[in-house]
Image (tube, helix red, strand yellow):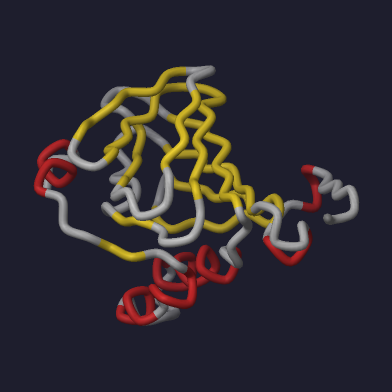
Length: 159
């Protein structure tokens, strides 16, 4: 059990994995005794989003705060709107990005918690040209983020 945890908006760290994409780091597993991890993803229209991937240990939850979010779950595409909620269990391939013509503001949580903040910081360094993209693939086991190919997702995102 973890102690109550409060993070003021002014104290939140914000990173970016691409132009038009911000990740606000809210709570990592070290502050929740492994209970959960949480971030806020703010994605502008036209941002690719995440490649298809899965996690082996955690369920990932998506709650749309504003806009529309396109989500791949296995090989099915869904469009989530404000107030929609989705839970993706471990080992299920998924991906997400803003739906065409819309921005998306999403609360993303994982349970049990996974040490993810350093992963998001790595994405930020890669986006700024300060780290090699190969480091992302090399870190898949450490951050429990395993990329898979999805022709459905690539086609949906215009790739």
